[in-house]
Image (tube, helix red, strand yellow):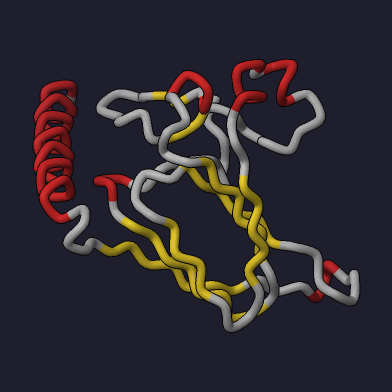
Length: 149
């Protein structure tokens, strides 16, 4: 029932994200944080935050038939090539997929990137709040799991 990576999500605890492309190219698809959870089909699992979309493939031909509200989402596609860095601001919905190689030979295609999350002054206080809630939820889940065994 859950999409495999890459899936549309917002990074946990409201952090910013950065991706440095080393080899190959990747297409990022971003949606602004103003997109409502119901348009993004955000789902919450036990202890989840609603930061993950339940849409398994945003480019599937039947995506708007199965997820009609998603048609209202404002989408931004950005191609990132070797040596480029993409910074994704806090709370932006995003996903990524490798692009075919320039030669068209997918068998030899390598797509290598380094991703990082970071916090700056603009989100520091919010990050502390969200991280505290995240840690508290982890503790509650651990206690509940221990009681089930």
